[in-house]
Length: 144
Image (cartoon, helix red, strand yellow):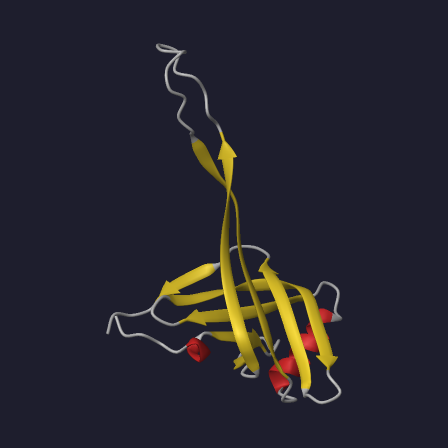
């Protein structure tokens, strides 16, 4: 599998239309995708050997995919969409996260935070964090 550059990991936001187009938040300089799986502990002792080893048994619980990113503002449509959604109620947007060499995740995401800032001698920055709300679709990257 070919190595890929980190800038090829993309976070895209829907434009909110009935037939959505997804626009890349290309000003992001750092991006992270996290997959969380909650485990439910259902460990019980072996009835035939209650004094024996006790092995953990788990069931799958709540699943969540989240993403975050930081960047330098470029006044793009996707940034404006992020700000609009963050101020909406509920703050939910359809989004795609493309992970090179792996695949694409698509779902509705709840914008947990959107931060904008600036240093006197630097550019305007922004960051965001979002978590899935509802099922997430994963499409593996096609083999090349």
